[in-house]
Length: 131
Image (cartoon, rainbow, N blue to C red; front, side):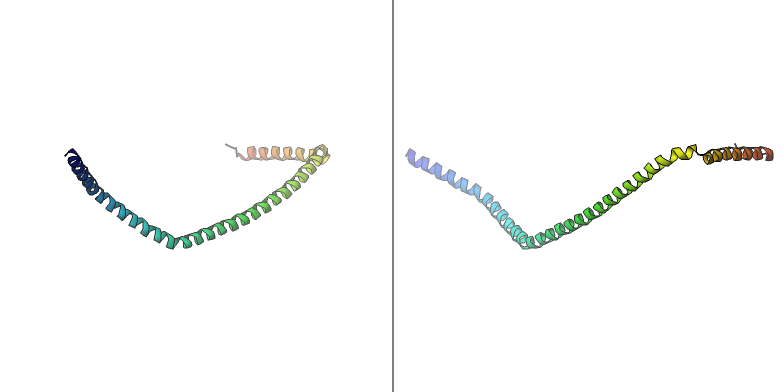
């Protein structure tokens, strides 16, 4: 008798378990069908997406190559400019001490001082004063 009661309780528990699992299984079935539709759509669009990605990477590679070429040209030009400026500066370093010691430079500095004195004199004479 205990065996029959325990089998009856086990059967009812199993029936309740199956009844509670039916809604869960239905939701799982719907989710699987939604995932299947999504997967089919993705598989249909994936070749176009991959082709676009390949075109984008090709364009980026071409742009990078072009930019690299321009940077190399700018670097070469900067190197040439540096060499020219270095030659000019070294030439000025050689010439400047001699030019400062020349009598022409002394006469020009004296002439500039005389011109400035005359200008101040004329301004005072005419009544124009700097404020």
